Length: 284
Image 1 (cartoon, rainbow, N blue to C red):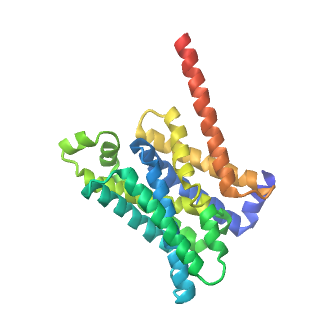
Image 2: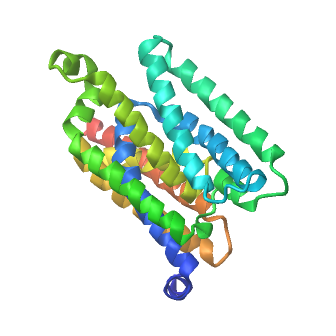
Image 3: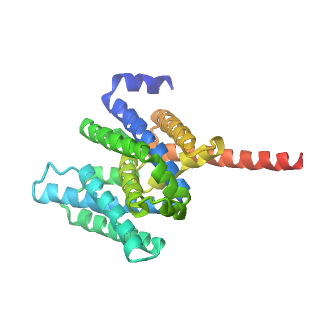
């Protein structure tokens, strides 16, 4: 732990990594609670894998056509929002089953990403970091983009808290009360998309679902309302991120994988502990 804290104090890349993790944790706690309540965790997976298409296209245009201003993270934001809106509109307008649409977006996004990665000359280590996660490669420019995304997610999520709460827990009642359910459902999907982009920089596309849902799942055991769950989930996510970075530093382990293993272990312990407590409580 001492070596990790010294590294954070002396190395800018470690400072960037820690800041990126903390920023992602804020959006993760807020939006992850909505996602768990609405039970659309696999939607986040579809958006995450469609992000690979945007990243691959952005890198292809930068290398082949010289569009160096188009960073992979910009492509990720565009692809994530496009996937979220497509899933929402097809589900609402075409009356398609949500799981069918999610599966299609998942597969198409991955296919497009692989296509452009293969067609891009040379080998991009940066693209592999987005796939498997490497929080240590976050740049200052990307950090500022994460700040902007975080502000948007938090402000919108809090500003429309009551409407999103109604959409998550009682959609029919919300319609009766005159709440434009379709609009707020699409808004929730867009918030999820931006949060996925935030988390991709921390743990990568492959493990983004875990970091989006595990802190919120843990928080459910320690909160009675959704806003309490958001606060607890945010704190849990920050702890997982900080501890994961600290644990992985000395043995040179993959930071993203370490964060997920730690979050998964805590979730299992809390779930098992709660089950045993309820069983003992019923017996008594």
